[in-house]
Image 1 (tube, each protein chain N blue to C red):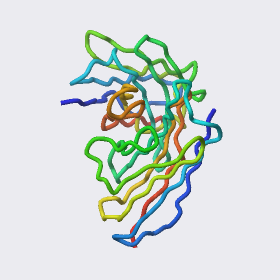
Image 2: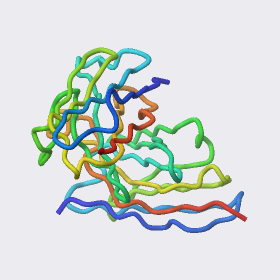
Image 3: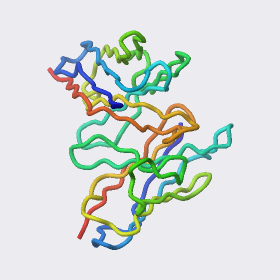
Image 4: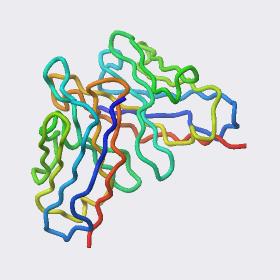
Length: 112
Length: 122
């Protein structure tokens, strides 16, 4: 199984400042179709998760452009350019390249 | 409107069985990959099972042999039959759609239900 490991590079975060979350997979997420099925989800308190980013760097419909994704192979990053109060929650990376699908352990974004 | 609505969660004794349902609207369940994802209280998300458009089924090792995923094409509904339930199956269970590879959300979980709570306890 592919293990997904997340870290928060800076926490808690000051409103208006940037934040980054790192995600590393235990093996390459490049699919045989050459796509990399790495996505980022946001889960606000008391809510189901919501898709933010898919295939490493594609913002999902309605997601603010302060969210961006990058990376390749086994190392990926979610960046928030300027954190807002509504960004509080837990962020998950996940891979849908191969079964069993797996999630990172989650990274809690807190605001100072 | 595209949405998923789960029902069937309950308090159940260890060793018991339960069936979860997920009614879809705005899209056709049998045309997409569909999954169940669960989240134990205060814990991370855990993928449980998937059924592909061709009917192929996949399961997490933790539920293999105990849970069965299925769908009713006429009712446009996804199911999760759970048996031999254990305390560590206690979680909110989410029904999720996996977006088609070529479109918006390509290959990711783009539509989530609100979840249904399953509590396994005596």
